[in-house]
Length: 121
Image (cartoon, rainbow, N blue to C red; front, side, top):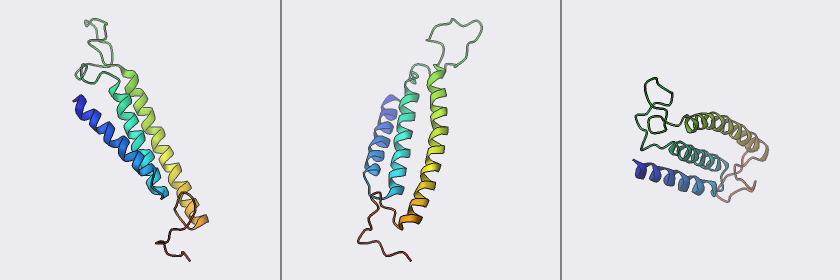
């Protein structure tokens, strides 16, 4: 399970960095989204995924109060908060992308027009 999670985090991080280096703004936004998903998976994996797969995140009566019987709820709360913030930031980036494209007439991050891109009316 840990190997699959590590590969998923690595794949998301590599794809996100590759998309961040692309010249179009939509690709940059998708790269930031993939990087945020990779960070979310990394934070979630810090809650001891392999050892506490069936453990409850809340205290139960009759069970000893050590960390072997419970999952850490903090990474779960951090990931849920990061998902909400990431969704809001993606929506804001898309609005800024549309406004920038409307003002400049191009979707390149440096504002220059590509040779293969036709003139916009």
